[in-house]
Length: 186
Image (cartoon, rainbow, N blue to C red; front, side, top):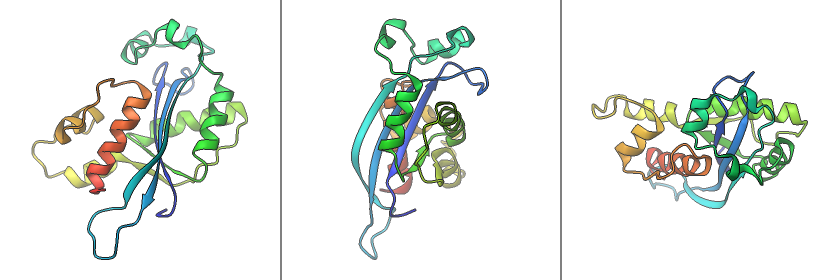
C-alpha cells in the first residue's frame, strides 16, 4: 500500500439509493506518497500529481431526489457539456490505475463506482485497498471532547480546513485530501 498513489475521490449523486440513483459528478485528487526519512514522525508526505472533475450526464433524471440535487447544486445548464457515464469511467479508470482510493465514507463512493464500472463495462484498475477518513478520524479523535460529529463539514471545522463549495465533487475531494493530511500528519 505504501508504494501506491492515493486517489482522493468524492462523488455527487442524484440520491442515496444505489439502485435508483446515479453519479452526476466525480472529483479526484491523485497524490504520490513520499516516504519520510527513517526516524521522522508522521505518515508519508503527499505530492499532488493531478486533480480532475467530471460532470456526468444523468440518464434517469426522473428518479433523482430533488433534495439531493439541491444539496449538490445541480443546475441543468451546468451539465450541458457533461460526459456520458462510460466516458467518465474510462477517464477515472486511467487516472486512478493501481491507486488506493481514499474517501470520506468510502463505502458510499465505492459502491457507486463499482456499479458504474459494472454498468459501463469499463475495467476498474484501482487497487483493492480502501482508506476511509471517517474511520481514521474516529480512531484518532474519539477522546477529543470538541469532536462530536465525524461529518466532513464538522472535521473541516475542527481542523480549520476551508471548503467553500461543499457538496461539489472536487471541493469535497480537496477537503478530504486536506483532512487526510491533518489526520496522518502528512
